[in-house]
Image 1 (cartoon, rainbow, N blue to C red):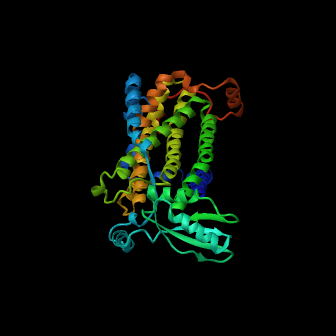
Image 2 (image 1 turned 45 degrees about the horizontal axis):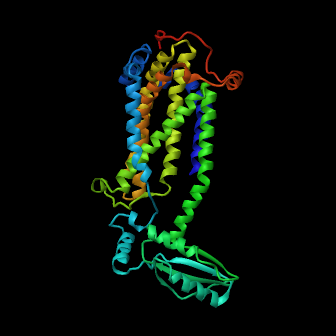
Image 3 (image 1 turned 45 degrees about the vertical axis):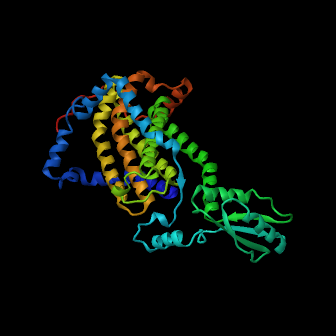
Length: 418
C-alpha cells in the first residue's frame, strides 16, 4: 500500500507537469468548447476581484475575531479527540462478517456450543530436548492461567514437537493475550528452544512490530513535511503549525471512531457489531491518508497566500485572498473525496466501515474547521511571525530561489477578457 500510494502520487505529478501542459497547448481555447453555458458563466464570474466572495468575507470575519475563533475551533478538536486516549485495538476474525455469512454463522456456533476455543489454539513449538522436554512444556503450559487444555505433544520434522494449548477466551481478547505472555515467560527446558504462535501471539507480535517501526515512519513524515513546506514558504513556523493541525485532526478522527465503533454507538444505524476496539492497522492507515490530504490542502492554500504576499499584499489581506482563491476548490475536492470514500460505510465489513468513515471525517474536518477557521485565525494572531525562519535557513531559501513568480504589485481586479 505504501509503494502503491507513492507511485500514484509521483506518476500523477509527472503527468501534470509534462503531459497536461502539452495537451492544453494543443487544445488551446477549445478546452472549454464542450462546457455547458452555466459553467462558462461560472468561470467568467471567477474573474471577479480577489477581495470579494464568500471565502474572502469569511476569512475577514474570522480574522476580526482570531482569539475566540481559534479557541473554539481548537477546543472542538481537542474534545473530539479525548476518547482517543482510551483507544483499544482488535484484530480480524469471523465476527467482522455480516451475520448472513456462513463463516460468521459457524464461528457463532463454535463459540456458543463448543467452548473453549479449539479453532484458534495457541501453538507451542519445542525444538530439541526430545519427548521428555515436550512433556515438561505441556505440563507447565497447562498450569498457565487462561489455558483450558493442553493437548498431547505431536512430533514434527527436524526435532520439533508441537504442543497445542486451548485458551478459554477468544484469541483477540485481553485474557488470551495475557495467556500467551504467561506461556512465553515460562522457563525453557535445558537444551530446547520454545516458540509460541497462534492468533493471540500473532496479534502481540504485530503490535510489537508496529511500536518498533512507528517512530521511523513518523520521522519520515515529519521531516519530509517540514522540509518541503519550508522550501515552499521559506518559513519554519508554517510547517510546524501544519503538522500540529494535522495531529489535531487525526486525534479528533480517532476519537470519533472510538466513540462509534469501540463504544458500540450507532450499531443499528451503521449495521455492525462492536468488537470493543479498532482494527489495529486503522491508526496507521488513517495517519497516512490524513497527513497526505491535509498537507495537499495546506500546499494549495499556503501557495496562494505566499503568492499574494510576495506581490505586496499585507499579511491579513494575503490570507483572505489565498482562502478566497482556494476555498471552493478545497471544499469541492473534500466533498467529492468524502462521498467517494464515505461510501465504504455501507460495507458489511467493520474495518472497511471504520476506514471509510475515518477518512471522510478527516477531509471534512480539515476543509471546514481547520482550513476555514483555524488557519486564518492563527495566521492573524501570529502576523509576521508566520514567515519567520532563522538567518541561516532564510539565506539558504533565498539562495535556492524556490519562488513561483517575480515580486510585483498584486492585482485586485482581473484583466479584461479573462
